[in-house]
Every structure is written in structure tokens, then in C-alpha cells.
Image (cartoon, rainbow over all chains, first blue to last red; front, side, top):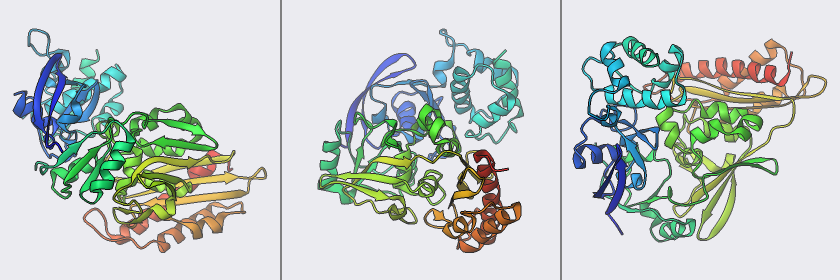
Length: 155
Length: 290
């Protein structure tokens, strides 16, 4: 019986190989083993949304998925939303320009959830943005500027 | 917190998974979407010696309409349900319920069958299954059995599932023509756990009488509550708005909810009454009731 396992995962376009404990959640794998600390952990039980990443393009709570379950899948984190030369991507720039963040803790999750939303619907209404981001908690902004940022990113 | 150390197996066939459970079922947990088990592991409310991850088992992610039933395999996710054309056509009640579960990220992973096996007392799908008199197909290395919804949900987070068994399929009977249905719930925010939710379906006869009414509530006790008394009061009649209100009021009386940090028992009774009235009116209207 295995308590750890070797996995091969594509993260932000690069193949990564690692041996991980079975209990390692995807968020800790990204942060601790791959040093991708852009993904934040808030509650570690699926409520706050800070750890949201994209798995095969779909929004997923990385605290509610085991790293071993990512075997063979493609992960995109907030680090993968930049331009190829590492500058903020259009979505990140829109958040910056519209004060869509203050402390920044929830931002990686907000950006990944938004990326999934815009892939499905490039021009969501403000109401839809609010509903689709309702699984991501922000304690600074009051959400208004986040919604404005997403709208700006669709223009 | 972090999950405790456990053995992990991700078998590629159901037979292998069942063999693991036959050997170590008492100390094992089955993981499908993980949206209930992972929080329990992270908070160490669950400390299984072995996690049997069934995500690599092929052929369990189906949703198909067959012989008057919707058959949902163990790995069909809430998002799959919400987007499925057969579900939209024949089981809009299920679609409406699926869309109210958690958030995108939760629905992308969480499974309908897992929701049944976990049996959270405020979950949506168990109430829909009870309202429609659905069935749960359960497999172990001893064989297969089909459990009726009423017999499956035993108590708070407790089902008729044995330690060596896996839910392989959930079956929802089709509703007759001229049936309207709805699932409505009250939660403080979109996507939060429901405080109270109601699944309702009303079937009208050609003359406009209610041939059938089905009502099941979530969040009002350890298991989904089927409001049979209220159903009987409405069946065979052409109820007025007052009759519907009276039936809904009787549901508020019939339940025995508990108080917790989300709501008092009294408030739950109030929600049960108000939401049942709304759900019946909406379902009946969708079925053609005037």
C-alpha cells in the first residue's frame, strides 16, 4: 500500500515530475514542492476560494484535490496568467488598473475563477460576475472594484 | 489543517476498488469528487487508514436516459448534470437543484453519487431523489443491490451503505407529462449550504386536477423529509391558493427541525412553510395549473 506516489503534471505549460505523499493537497504541492507560492490557502476546507486554480481549464479548489489526483492533468495557477515575459497578463492588469485588490490574499483565486468564467462567457453581465465569483471571499474590497475589474477585462 | 497520513489506491477498475473495500472497508473511505471528504480529511474529522480514489475507474461518468429512468454514474459531476441535455429535457428538477450546489469550483469536482453517499442533511440531491422515489445502485464484491431512496438515508450523514459497498449508479424515474417541478432553497449567500430547501413536483390531469404532488425538504432533519401528508391533501383536487397555503403550513408543523448556528428550529419551520408554498405554486404553474 502506497503512502506516496510519483506523479507527472503539466503546470503552467511545463512538465513537472515529483514524488508526493498521498495526503498532500494540490495547493501545498504547488506551493511547497514547486515553489509556486502565488496560490494562496485561506480556509483549507473549500469555503474561501483563495486556492482556486484551473485544472484542464476548469476552476477547482486546490485544497480539495490531492496532488496525486493531478497526475496526467494540466494545471494553471496565477503564475500562468502572466504574459510570456512574466509581466501581468490582461486580466491581472485589469485588476491592477481598477483597484480590484487591496491586500491581495484572495486575488490569485479571484483571477483563476475569473479566467474560467471568461473562457466560458467572454462578456458576462455584472450580475453573472457576482454570482460566478460568489465562491471567492474578499475581506478588503467590498467586491465592487473586483466586478469593475472583470468588466474592464472584457472590453 | 492538513489531512492525516493515509494509504492511497487509485484502482482502474471497479472490481479492484471493490476488492480493496472487501479487504479493508472498515478503515477505508471512497473518494469520488472529494468535495465533502477532502474538507473532512483536512479538518481531521475523517481519519481513514486507506483512501480508495475511484476517479481512474473508466465508464462511471455517464448520464443517460434509459427505460424511463435517468441513470447517473458514480463519477458524473454536478456541472455535468447541470449541462446535460437529457437532464434539461426530462429532469429539470435535478438540473435546478444541481445549479444551486456550492460554486463553480465545487460543482466541477463534486459528484451526484458522492452527495448521496455523504448524505449531508442540507444537501440538494438527496431531497430530489426522495421526492422522485429514486433508487441507488450499490455494488460490493458480494454483488449488487438496489436501494430505494427512502431506505437509503438513515440519519445524519448516515446511509444504508455498508463499508465494503460503493454507490455505482443513481436512478431518477421520469415524471409524467403535464408535470411541473422546481427546487428552491434559502441560503444566506448564493452557493452557501441551504438552511432549508424544497423539491416539489406537481402532475396535472387533463381536467386540471392535481393527479400527483411530490414534496421533499432538505435542511429540516437528519434525512430528507418527504411531506406525504401534504401530498395526500392536495392529490385529486384542484387546490386554491388557500389550499396550497394550508398544505404548506402542515409541512411546517410536521417537521421536527433542530436549532443550530445557522438557524433556530422556529425559523426552519417558517422557511419550510414559506418555501413549500412557493415551490408548490411554481411547480403547479409550470405544469399548467391556472
